[in-house]
Image (cartoon, rainbow, N blue to C red; front, side, top):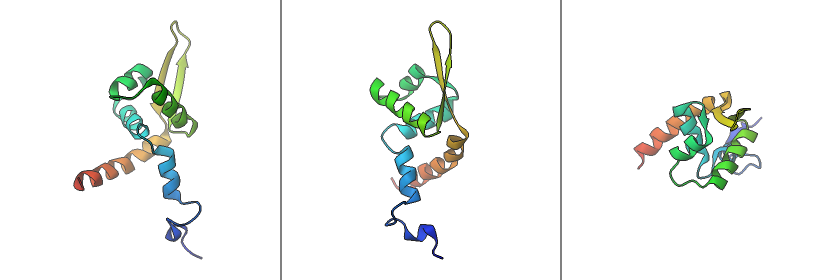
Length: 109
């Protein structure tokens, strides 16, 4: 039996390609890193940490990260309504991989 990863990158369902689909894009990794650094964070604070992100793009990325299990969204029924975002266990397990990738990137600048 062949190792599943030995067929990569030509195989139909490449696990690496799937991982990049989930966290790829201009802002998703930045959002995850911001939440990792700051813990539970409100929307405007996340936006303030990401220089240049538009409201539409940030809202879309947060919805996708929530849908895919990387971020939790907690809504507090206050006036005005308070919403906080936080990392899930799935994202916390991803952090050492992102840190290793960052180290590799720094070595290859």
